Length: 449
Image (cartoon, rainbow, N blue to C red):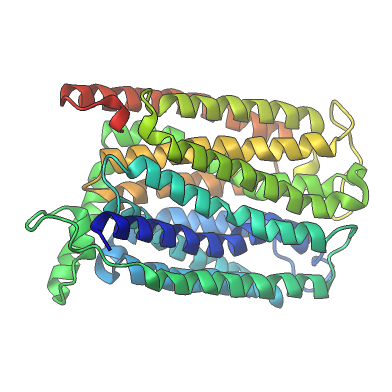
């Protein structure tokens, strides 16, 4: 197998592994609050929003040390161990206990930081400046296929149900746990890339993938990775991109946890309200896959760079927020188990609700594929620290959003995303223009990014 084929094989295996793990985890996140609401008459008194807030809070803090962990353990083993923790978190729902639920939330927060730092490193090591756009799109499309499969099952299994029984819950979460473990095992198929860098080239990819058995060398690499993370955090580009990344954290929380809960709480949707959560997740996935596929495949022929894709993303999201504001009752995110009979500015429409799910997914793919692409392009030699900072900012904003989702009405959640999204788009444009100017100054073709 040629080096280029080997790299593409690794990207596909990486994407398929994440597809399995996040088929389980994103489906779990989408239905968690609804399942827990149906559990709160028992001895279990947890909150899906609070759990996600803990996960993303710990995730953000753990990103400070995750480059060091990946440097010592290596990206492949890091992803395998992290996948096991994802599976354990999902398995908690088979027989829920409040203490185990929140304890697992802490551990999966740490695992997520290590998993995503290793993923960013693996993506960058298997790409160059000509293939980073394509590979980011391929990975993103495979990853977001996860939204399709799990939610398709939820849609059919929960059709006509107004209450989620113990048998329904156990069947779903046993299946999701097995799916997550399959994705974890697939990480072993990724082939090492130590031969991809030229001898003597001491970038972070080589440092992280090196096979030195010296404990001292490993500790040196770990310290170096931590120092690079701190140093990169204060660069102009990272600080500007952090505003864009903050927006992706807020809208991630909204489409992955809050919006499905809103749909499931609207009594005017009738007996389909619970199964519509699954259908919403499917259409979010369709939007994500369509966006990732198109922007990945067209990246080599894109002479205008990344800005038009990000502009499309913010316009699509603003349209979605406007329609959601008109369609969804204001108290839907925090409605009790009985749901809400309130009406917003129009009679709640299932078709509009599902169309907004598609728009949320499409807009999210616009932002994330371009952020992955620009980070891989700007920091090809510091990939692990750069992706750790990206996930640090994204996850701390997701944690904040999950926390306020317990209390804020829908209109305030939408307003926060509109304001942060507007400024995040402007800061992304600024970094992209500077990157384009630097590329032209080097004599490279702008379309090569």
